Image (cartoon, rainbow over all chains, first blue to last red; front, side, top):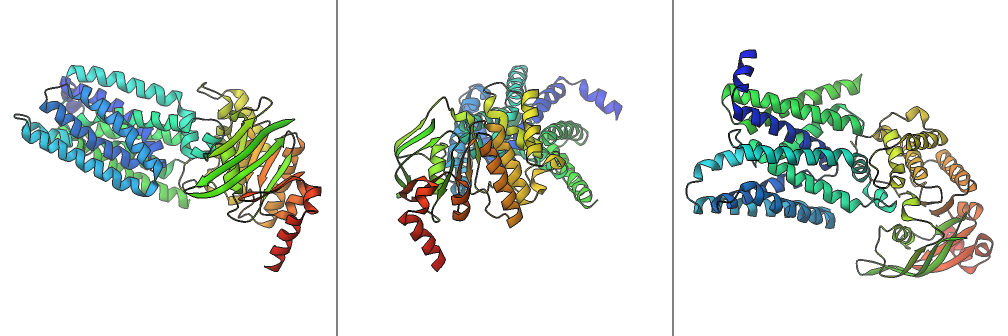
Length: 273
Length: 235
């Protein structure tokens, strides 16, 4: 085990993946608690598809992927949020429409552009080889922004998540904080999709929150434990993907799924005691 | 001393008129009950004052230094997700948020206030319990404690006793009475007309438009009251 770890850490790309992945896991799990409780989980999924579309278009036009996908995904996040606010019923189908269209744009631009075909699999399902050093610097900077904002707005995020109308009636600008949450989610998805893949990134948002809610019963403990769970799952996932040579994103999702089952059982047992 | 003045408020619900040309004012220390049948626009009216419903025309003016972030509110049946992880303390403490402005974290002052209101409403033993595991009466008291954390001036209650049993209803009423006696203005939407005329000092009778606004004494002598009571006795 120890040998495997030292061997892994001798590769720069794995260290990059661990740093960026760890930060993304942290950000996405914190945002995930609010998104899951507000029933916005699908927004994360929709955004990752949009990110895929933006990414492939950027690749085809020879632009830096992050510079194109960040503004596109942020704008889509605001749009999806507005859709969800307007009518709860129609928003899931609206998200599905946007997702598939973005996916279609992505696939078309891949097929039109020459020479990027080999990367498709890695964009869809993640690759720890995908990060270059510029990506790492940008990712770290953005993750820090997300983390600081989440901590600063923690109490407001709780209030808006728990009871949006009350927050609004008593003078808190709920819309502003919804926008901030959507904005931060968009950024987290763009950073995370290189490692996790666009198809799997939303699991990083949904799983840790759901897992920790099986056992923890206060908002603060859910936030803290889902952050810890998320980072642990990510590290285990990277190790397993290295050892068995399987795609990193898929490996992280499976570790999260197993963790969820464990917490589910523990939660059931604790409830009975 | 007037706290809120409403002039000719009109609220549309889709394309239907929910509130039509309602004018009234709320004085400091009032105990105003808004009564009327189901669908008469009572809740819509207070939601529009709270900024949760857009008014189509008219004016809502906050007077004498009352600010939007100095209002307490007990919503009608807050639908909180069943598995929402939150302790009673977290919920009550969130009521103090509006006085914090942009300052990110709670200070001891806010925590003390939350504790004080938890104690006032007899929730001390539940402080660290999970909100969702409480009975509906207990949840209602938690939300009232939260509302008290938000205000020292005025509190809006939207059918605070719906779905509660008789004993808990009495208890809620006496708590609300006490709040009013401490100088906080109470504005309550209520179905319970008998309670309203025995406890409030002013009545607003809604039927899309304002059918009556004035003191309780004038109200019990009014035609609208007699019709309303007569009507419900026939049912």
